[in-house]
Image (cartoon, rainbow, N blue to C red; front, side, top):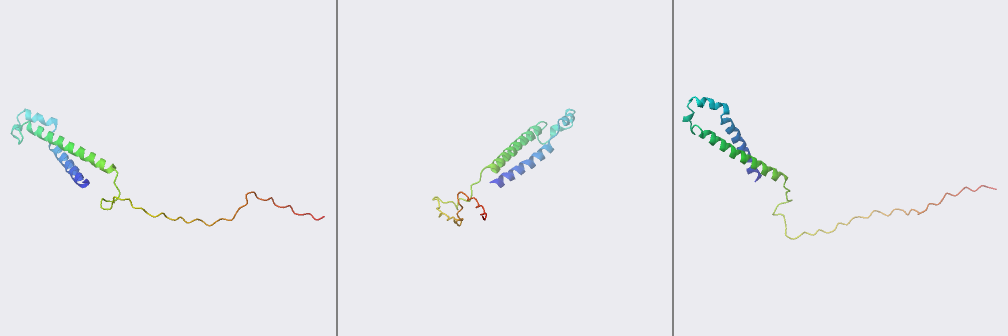
Length: 121
């Protein structure tokens, strides 16, 4: 699914670049005003602007939507595993036995003060 959307996105981008390069700028209409033969083009004198403009708008919309879908797919959570490995009943696992550490030697609760050395009399 993602690969198809990437291909559509790339084709729309290449088409947009080609259509923008084919279109004439606003200053190019000056030559048509003085009869440079623009009325005998393939799409007519004004037909080329409408056709190219509409096609550019459609490709821009396709490009924008494809990028939004790709962004959504990139942030959507992915389910772990495949459908073939999922089961309907939960699998129970035996509890692991945790080994107990060896008993430490007993420490007296209150330490005994050291005995004072006996002084001979």
